[in-house]
Image (tube, rainbow, N blue to C red; front, side, top):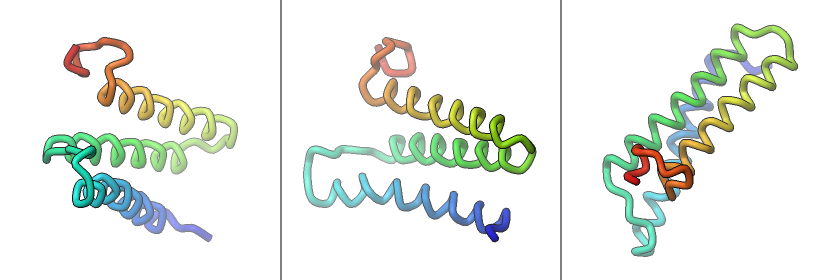
Length: 96
């Protein structure tokens, strides 16, 4: 059985692994060009998303609601990430 502390450890490890991908890519190619701010923003987005899903899993009892809420949280992450990356909505956070 997965305990709550195991899930929190998994969230932290997942964030670290996902952030290591662009860091390692920067060592081999000039196509990936992240600065410290990019890593901070990405880490914050990933960590907050993981912790929000963890909160939903701890507090919401009905599986359908859990799935819907976690799906909405992940959709928000994807939309924010895409907006920051390419600015598809043209909002001020994308620099448009």
